[in-house]
Length: 373
Image 1 (cartoon, rainbow, N blue to C red):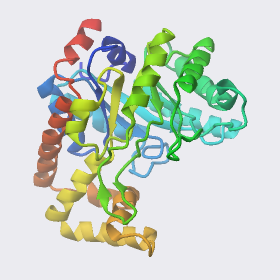
Image 2: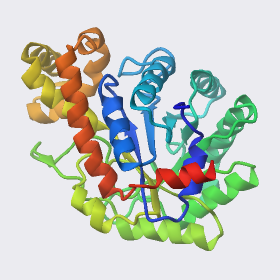
Image 3: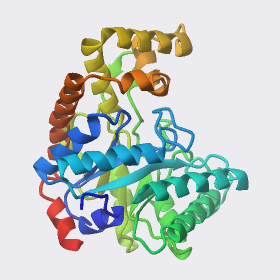
């Protein structure tokens, strides 16, 4: 009853409604997933629980999780929260070279995700870009080839079950006058149209629009807010997709650090249909660990400085960018948290998730998904 539903059901039910579905990269699953799902239940908001390939792989990503262990924790949390409108999403299934050997490894991961019960997938071959191509399709040919191959593999191995599909274009490509890689409307249309010609039908497209993953810092190493997302260009991409009759909307990555007020007032809810929030939850854990278990926090801090510190970088920037790498190194100690800490972590995550659901304007929209199902 509380198992994950197909991601496409969520996206199709909310197509062109003024809401954003939150997708949470729950790097520390214990307490975090329950807090998020309880907040989803409180607001009746659809939600995705996800981890990327780098975070969660067959041989354990940097979080220490495998697809099976993430699924186990998510299934248990949903059962305890008694919440039904959620999907288990494979975020950023990254393809860097597109060789047959790499694609074979990707297929092994995808098969493990399917066997574990994942119901939604994000294929990210955006690194494959031919700057010398004369047309958008020529520039994106390897991205299209690999995305098509993996999407077909997912479809075959899902054995008739429905699933959500996200694709990505723009991680590497043309730069605008400010030096940022920005996905153009023409690229997005060429990408989606060719995928559809190949029989691949995504509901969501991740684009490059000025955001950055994780915590971000200024030139002096001081933490800064995420305010570089180019809203007009995001709207232009969606307008072009609509004009061409494509029911595909944008996944906004890199929301950690984005002021909630900015999300509430300026994000084009509905044009952006999926909003990824990842490092934010990890930050909550580390902030609390510093108080509840300063000894473990110091051990993790020292390990990060020993392995990643550069003379020109401030310690706070080093820790903010690389503390995620410590999760697998200290996995057993992290998951040995006492009951009080776990409960309080869940409560803190719950409170913050409530604010995100309301900023995303997703309250009550789980009901629309239930109607479609």
